[in-house]
Image 1 (cartoon, rainbow, N blue to C red):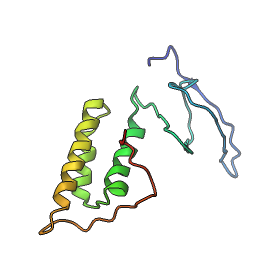
Image 2 (tube, rainbow, N blue to C red):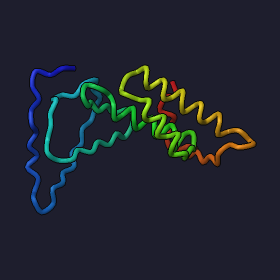
Image 3 (cartoon, rainbow, N blue to C red):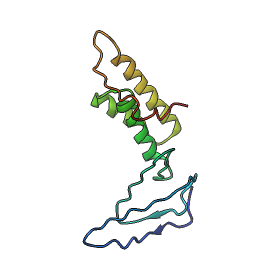
Length: 132
């Protein structure tokens, strides 16, 4: 999505406590307004899937899902393997699939009874984000 113009959102936050909580409901494929602002925005998705557009990519959402898949669903904690899986992902669908494949490969190696890893998956906490 290439917007015609990107507008600045002014939240006018109080100086003594610059915080505001806003709730949005519903689901959309694209944001209503492409905007920027000089404050931190945190999105909480209670159910379903949220999409964050950064440089025209659903980047942050997929990156978070990869981390969840690696650490929560597979229970792995090898930092070098996690970094490798994250470096593969560049925002494209092909790199997302490549990163998932790398994580699956690390997981198979971690299952080796002779020299595998101590795995601690968190069962029932979060669903597998890539399970279809």
